[in-house]
Image 1 (cartoon, rainbow, N blue to C red):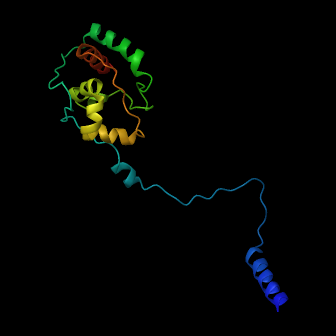
Image 2 (image 1 turned 45 degrees about the vertical axis):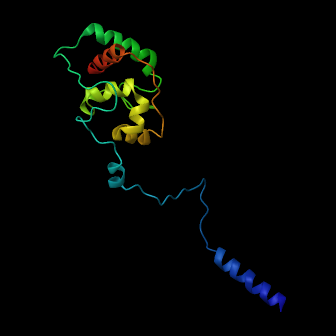
Length: 158
């Protein structure tokens, strides 16, 4: 009786696994998961030019022309402390800086520079960016308002 059960089990195993397929060189990968583009798009951080952020900056007004002295100081600051996480034209640890004022208000940008801890705790856009960038927090660089304003002026040149 044991031999009969063993033969039946072995026959079922051979029949189930005995599918004749040609062997190919290499290997194949079959992935069935697809990303829904609508789902991805809904997770993007929205453009919000009305949000001024959380921090000391309540109003920033830019002159029509860029102040080249301020922008030069800002560029030096950017190259010293910001390039560790930000590039001008592409994402890195943090967002690309080119066109930032098309996505955020100047007040929001400066408040993010001056008060990243408060912004990440209370500001909905900063929270969404934190999530989008894999919880990579922006470190507080302890900038003065003048240094942040120089950086803001430099960002206008990008």
